[in-house]
Image (cartoon, rainbow, N blue to C red; front, top):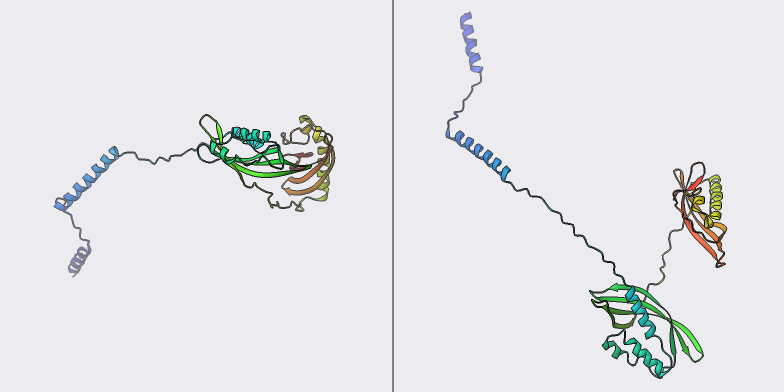
Length: 301
C-alpha cells in the first residue's frame, strides 16, 4: 500500500512541473532576425561617423543709427526766413529782397514768388526772431524743416509783432549744397499739454520729531549750498550726489515739503526759495532727495 501511494504522489509531482520549450536557433526566422539586428547596428555606427553636424545659426542684424548733423540746414533755413520776410516800402528794397531769396529757392519757386511782395505794399516788415522747431529727413536727400518767424510789421505810425509757423523742404546734394524745393507753407507747432502730474503728499510715516530734525538739517544745508565747496558739501551729501554750483543766491525758505519713509531712508520732496543777487529775482528750485541717518542726517540720493 505504501509503495503504491508513493508512486501516485511521484506521478502527481511530475505532472505539476512546468514544461520548458526550447527554441530551435537554427530556424530561418531567427536567422533573419539576427541578420536584421546586425545590419541595424552597423548602419547606426556608419551614421554616427558620417553624420553632418547641423546647428542653427541665429543671425543678429545690427542697425546702426546715423546721427545727422542738421545745423547747416537750420542755418540755411534761418537765413532764408530773414531774407524772405524782410522788406521796406521801396522798390529798391523789394527788388533786393527778391534777388536775395533767389539764392535759396529753385527756379520754379523763384517764379512762384515774383509778386508775393507788391511794389505798392502798405507795410514794411523786419524779422525779430526765427526759431527752428524741427528738421526731419524725408527720403534720401530731402529734409522737412518747421520754423516760426516773429515779424515786426510797421504801417504808418502803427507797429505790431506777429508770429507765424511755416514748413519748407530742403534738398541737400552729395556735396552738401542746399536748395529749398517747397515754398514756406503754413502749419502748426506743438502747444501746451494739459498734462498734470500726480500731486505729491506725505504718507504719515515720518513722525513730528523726525520731521523737525530733517527740516533743521535741510535749512542748514540749503543756506550753505549755493556757495559751498565740494569739501563742505561732503559733510551733508554722500558721494558727490549734489555738485557745487557757486551762485550768489541768498536763502529765503523751504516750501512744499513732503516726507515718505521706507526702511531707514526718508524721501523728501521740496522747493527751495532763493533771492538771486545778480538778477534780483526770486529763484525757486525743486528737489527730490533721499536722506539717511547714521550719526547725522545725510543726503544719499
